[in-house]
Length: 111
Length: 114
Image (cartoon, rainbow over all chains, first blue to last red; front, side, top):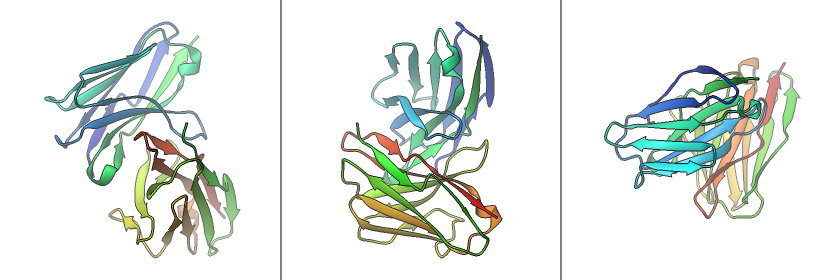
């Protein structure tokens, strides 16, 4: 399947600071790039997604940017809060609507 | 929004027994569902694609005779872990695309094989 690399694997930020997670992918035909948040023992929840016809999308404190030429996209969380602490996964679509996931980033927001 | 429900949420079984996990789309029809496996502190790994009315397609390295998938209706897919062993202990999650194109996940089923 699609090769998706996600960095960093862990991220600790002070409350109120910003967090940035980056993902790169290999298949230039991919056109859908969602981000999921997963709390311990729970299902992944979609927090934001972007399609290849746009370069940036924002939803309140969360934004995603996409660089199709370089094949990378990033999640930006501003004004982080303790409830933002979770594992975040990027994903990329491939053939037959399958999603390939990055390895995940454990975000810890320090109060 | 669209809801995908999974049952059971957790199950403990003895080694050598079989376990069935159900995945239902509650307010939409899903001709395709996906089954993922997630080991502790790891990412979601796609196991197979469940297709209504036809055979499932398995990812490389996933044993189709061990992980039986049945998608008998437009709202139900089942995953049966046959002759389960401790190494099969994991978090199994199903997912399906809603009409709007968003991928929804079930609650997940935590399997522990003793």
